Image 1 (cartoon, each protein chain N blue to C red):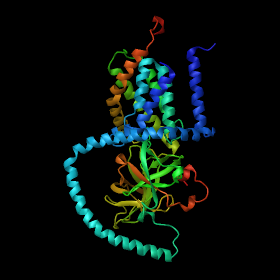
Image 2 (cartoon, helix red, strand yellow; image 1 turned 60 degrees about the vertical axis):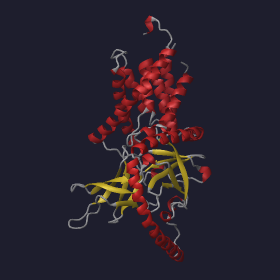
Image 3 (cartoon, rainbow over the protein chains, first blue to last red; image 1 turned 135 degrees about the horizontal axis):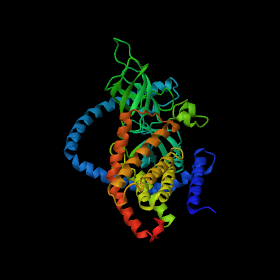
Image 4 (cartoon, rainbow over the protein chains, first blue to last red; image 1 turned 30 degrees about the horizontal axis):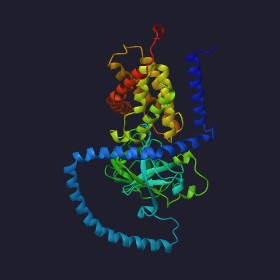
Length: 295
Length: 169
């Protein structure tokens, strides 16, 4: 009755409808299916990813030997200065903790002790396409990872866990177009919202326009940190540095292009910050809109 | 070739795409092996075969991505549509045809995903210079990697091709 061609089209339409049902979330097995598939694939993806990165690093390093030598000398000089500063820093932390304890501060400043508050996760896979920016880490619920936990490195903010399976988790990078991070300009203390773009840039939006004659609200070279205002990320985690300001007198706000502090192309390990649970998320699990900063 | 062999090829391609291809990226852009595989197989075996491979590749990419389902499937089906339009317009032995179809398919894929981004909460601007930069960069990378995918698939297709009767063409 039906030609072979018609049967194939009908079968394809049924598959697409089924996938639409999964997309609409009406089939409860969707998330279980992806969890199991991810668990099966993670042991394969991890060595593949590590091998590919190793080969790419070999090629890159061979070309950059001379530059690396100069960089090593510069870093050795820096290190000597930092050792001295570190001793003073440790003393300041001790004094700060004593004072906070005395004043009954409830929350830790995880930016002061990121390693102690975090779990190390290795990158095993990336988003298959180019418009979204997510990575998979090889730590999951069994390691205490929960959705909505911040992810960072010692260099700066990486993103936020959006899905935690038993053995792996998906991290939405701050360069993803759906990411929203409340940032603060270190110099002027003005705030804005840092969003990603499809080609991996960061743009800080909704920055107040400055007044004539006063210092600029934001300028190239300014450092941008998390503000902590929305309570989705701990405060004072470095996001990046401003490279360009887009300002127009006709607009109510100005924008700044921000270079991320973390090099996402070479990121191999990241820290899932377990030692900080946002007060707003201590009760009911948040919705996707809350994670996207729309609420 | 059995459907299971096709699923295996697509599965391996998607796995390599998520684990290995980030190392071959230029900036934040990496070549799209699943797209190249779908275009190549669609040109070699016909639009229906290309559509099935597009559906399978899209669904597998959706499973590996935290994005909602169909975020990759719908653009991949658009790619299959481009292949169906392109096939038969030029002589099959024309060396330029795979590249031309890859260019059109890449543009369709990028534009379809950009159109879907607001549905997943993404902020997207449609400034011509931003769109052109994304499309051209991805297009260049896909065109460079096309021979790596097309040549082996063409050899495979010749091995598994069943003899055709005149009126089946």
